[in-house]
Image 1: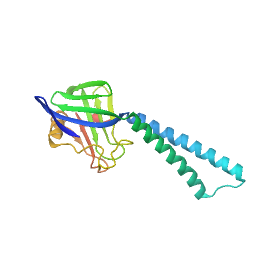
Image 2 (image 1 turned 180 degrees about the horizontal axis):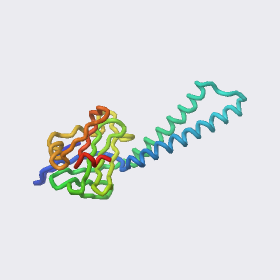
Image 3 (image 1 turned 90 degrees about the vertical axis):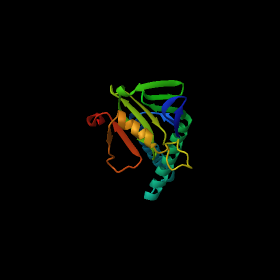
Image 4 (image 1 turned 120 degrees about the vertical axis):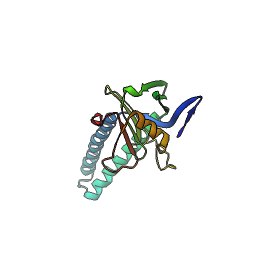
Length: 192
């Protein structure tokens, strides 16, 4: 939820429930789940074929693999929901301040190369990448989204978009016409 900071300060505050995880970690988790799920499904199929002395057809394989996949997805959603914390991100002319999970981090605009805000999908997140390559990613989508809301993160107010354009003048267009994806860059070549 976006709101004015107030208290004599110009700027906006975004409050979200999110899990701090980098996209690299998320990809590793997904690859690990596919490997574990594939191994578990294979072991289950071998055990079933040894016990019944018959080989399952395609529908049986799909049923076993689907059952394993559902268990893994539910476990992941539970883990992400359990790790989810309340974060407050303040945006003003001084920079971005991220507070949550007992940590406060202030990032002046001069140290920020890129800000990515994804409003929708399971990959809804706020990602701030520094000029030195360090980044902070708050995943608000997977296992976190309120089922009553269309977006995990509310749409960006016009004043916040103006603030981002003042300090990060290049808005990178989405390659796949993703309406909920907003990427603000210091320079165009900083996207790499």
